Image (cartoon, rainbow, N blue to C red; front, side):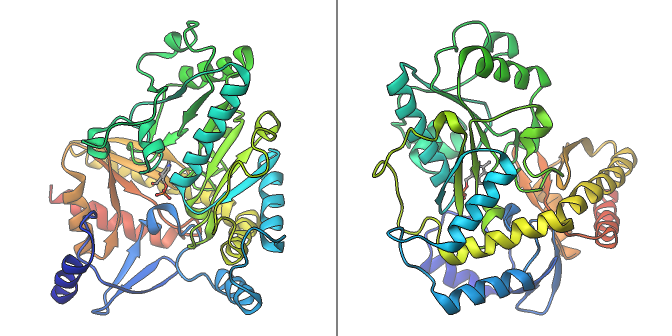
Amino acid sequence: MNDFIAREKEAIYQTYGRLPIQIEKGDGVYLYDELGNIYIDFISGIGVNALGHSNPKIKKAISNQIDKYMHSSNYFYQRPQIKLAEKIKELTGLDKVFFCNSGTEATEGAIKLLRKYGNENGRKGILAFPNGFHGRTNGSLSLMEQPKYRENMAPFLEETFVFHGNANDLVSGKYDNLAGIVIETIQGEGGIYEFPKELYEAINKLQTECGVPIVADEIQAGLGRTGTMFSYTQFGLNPDLVLSAKALGGGLPLGAIIVGKKLSSVFTQGNHGTTFGGNAVACAAGLVVINELENGVLKNSEKLGKYFKEKLAILKQNHSKTVLELRGRGLFLGLKLNTEPSEVRDKLIEKKILTCTASNKVLRILPPLNVTEEIIDTFIEKLAEVLDEK
Ligand code: PLP
């Protein structure tokens, strides 16, 4: 392991704080390290591995597609891309899909699209919300304000704003001419955080009364994570544009911009594109993800989410000094702690359990969506042991 740490330091640009584990393989909810240790993985590749590691159906679909071809370019019509887009349309009721490769690339495309829509319709400015996370490229960072992501990286895009105020301020007339509002319905990096319900209502009002397009960033919260296919449905939002990535590619890089009728003619041929977007292998994997969600995994996320939350609520009661708040829906869960969550995370690693942290002292818990009660029980038992020592 020390050898890997030293080699990584020498060879790789030091932008990540890594956990002291060298991964050898994954299988379902388990990750194996090079020493033979087996971990219960409740990070799930930061929400990517919705079906767990090395899912046999994903492997088969990938392998079948590789046997045919891997990459052809967007010069051609491609069956897996079209099938996945049709499936996404069916799920969202929206009109068109543009495939890209990552979350931040989806955000960038959305900003571009909103700009064009705004310029053609006399609308200006894109509004986002405090503590949101939309990616690491310059456009995405322009919708964020946390210094830890932005320090010394200015200038950012013009006419981008982060809203500070309450729901009443939002409907006060200052924001009726926006080109778009971008919101993570439930914030992931921001600490599994939900806004007061009045804020979602105010956003809805700006859309219905003033025609402001809504963009729901479902990159982390989407695709079954919160117990419904997309989290925005739980907040009564009808977005004009949905951003998807992470779980969408079943472990391969895949993102999507999904637009409703209002925005589906804004881009015309040549306005947007990407070499790898909608790669056939990634789309073949994505189809399995959605089929599996529809064939029981989504139900499991909802059911086990309730089970998990009940267990966590008891744990919170028993550790009320350390656990201040239980957050989240479905299997998108967080515990706000009054201690550093990285300490709890590290103690859990010693017990062969993997979790990650989020902003504002939150321990973030992202099991695969096909997790079982038994695994959840083991997690609760180990977490209780760690908290008992606090
Ligand atoms: N939006 C949200 C809500 C995210 O959680 C993330 C990544 O964590 C992104 C956007 C950026 O996605 P990516 O890292 O694939 O660029």
